[in-house]
Image (cartoon, rainbow, N blue to C red; front, side):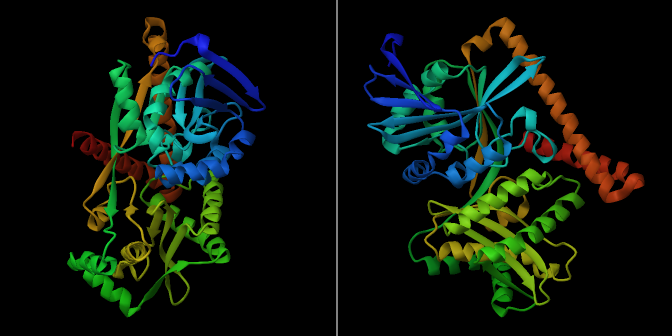
Length: 447
């Protein structure tokens, strides 16, 4: 449907700008929220819509709001809400990431909140890396076609940008099912770049206890591990229940996680202290709402040797972060696998439909399930960005970002190796790490 500018009326209400398309048959009204105060007011409506839309945990208010407060910039917030008869039916949780050269905006990119931090805040572990999975627009199922129809015209009417980069989308997302198809039909330059596999375990909703036993009996390794867990020898696996327990065990588990990744020469998710504070907020909110499974394996001496932090949303479990102690004398009893199997048992016994192991192609994930989703980035370029002058400017800015990010990433990895192996040992360790990462990337891109 063509929307004529003469039918547009604007009104302003505090921190929100609204734009009503009076001639649109859908009757949708859009609003721009660009402050944290305005973001905060959406809390309850946001969560209600996530539930109606069947959204993932990374689209929830209690993930995206603390993410923005941790990584956001002063003037970048660009949340678009769609309402029908005052009822919230769609959310575009976006921010504008601007790369400036000498005060001049060389590249303006619209991104999902929760994806890469803004260019001005990229560092350490989060250089060109998202801490979230399964990002998407949040849209009521009955209004998907209307929102897809009006989304890009609304963005153009409210925000000046050069490209849209939508990270960590999956095939059944609104972005890929509706928006990409709409943009392709309208001849927009739209590209999907596949990234990593995300293993997922789909759980049958009937005869759950029987299906659980069938799942365990499918492989010898699972049967053996289950017998060890039921015997209760060597260590105990349990889910933390109180806030006091979580606050006590969380820093211990973070240290275990970081030690494991640093030994392998990687920064680890908690390399930057900001992420520690962000996850503290998320964990507290999830625990208050009964949507956190913090599972630990602990010896009789009180030593934590493995853990998994699982978040719940819409009958789905998301295994966000976990690790084990490779130096423990109990390593041969597979405490990490025991923690994962404990979480799977809880999922079967608690009306869960999907258990997501999230991005990463570690072999242990494919021992738990054969099903996968593919995380992809969706790139949309504005028409003005295809003009020669703008295209040259954008290409130059993107090349500069690519070089800068690679440089900072290698500096971070070198710092970790220098700390782990000393000044004399770090060159050899770093070169080995560089070689391994190169061949891993080559293998991933060639398959």
